[in-house]
Image 1 (cartoon, protein in one colour):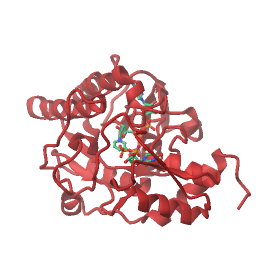
Image 2: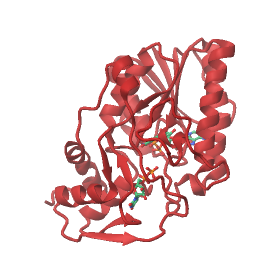
Image 3: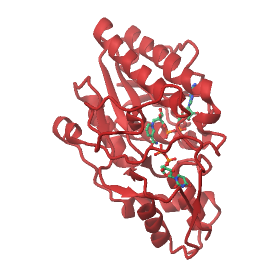
Image 4: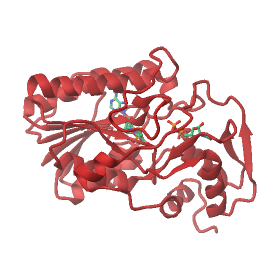
Length: 322
Ligand code: NAD
Ligand code: UDP
């Protein structure tokens, strides 16, 4: 297939480019670098199966030639208001990427009779009142809360995707991605793994927001990409959760990072670091992914950290050190 990937210079987008090229597809990458980096796709620039357009997906998209699939991943994704890359600090761009960007990419898919895959998120469940979260749960989102610019943009994007499927017969898919980590995450983007792993490798106390009792479930990027590829190749039009169902508190997560890195500096508890209401529990119910896609994650947190640490060390200039 010839595949358009928006957000190609981001963490997930760049891994998808690698995987789809390795599978023999031709990839057209698009990104405006608002939160991504040229470094993430520099290794693809000589590849004659890869072309790249610097473009803001909120504006009309024109890509010459026929496309068989469109994967819409362009959006700021970090919820940490302390990061300049966070959607809190890019509120209108975030809403436009989710709303206008989804409209434009659906338009490309429709014009090309291409299949379409939307990168949605566990954030559409908001601060969930049902646990674990299955795709049937409609969520608990405050439309004017601080996270709303991201959550509501993604909810709108899902609705628009289903509208294009139902009205125009576009061959759509929706993946609801839960917390994912791995190499090429931006060390400064403020999400839990980059913050804590960077701090631990530098021998600093790892910052735990609140009392650390809030939970998340962390998925290694290769597992996520495998699930996305299976969904793309399936005929499933309704949303599918992809994430690791092993739920842990942030305290357990911080302890694991300190143990694996040998960090002796412990933890620093930071009160009220989040201006937003922090979802208290998050865990995917992956029954649909298991039954429809035959997918489940294979990489546990310790293995995933060992795969991620070399990238972080290189970025921190710690290569060669123990
Ligand atoms: P990222 O910030 O690394 O990647 C997003 C990419 O989109 C960046 O390269 C950015 O420059 C680009 N982008 C943003 N707005 C754009 C625009 N208007 N035009 C063109 N490019 C634009 O984040 P990520 O973690 O790779 O997330 C990728 C997608 O996956 C996002 O849609 C995000 O909502 C979704 N997602 C990620 C996670 C996760 O845990 N990583 C969880 C849920 C959903
Ligand atoms: N978190 C933390 N310390 C940090 C960064 C994040 O304790 O330095 C917590 C945050 O409060 C949240 C969890 O880690 O409970 C996951 O945060 P992340 O930013 O990765 O994304 P979220 O799951 O909230 O969308």
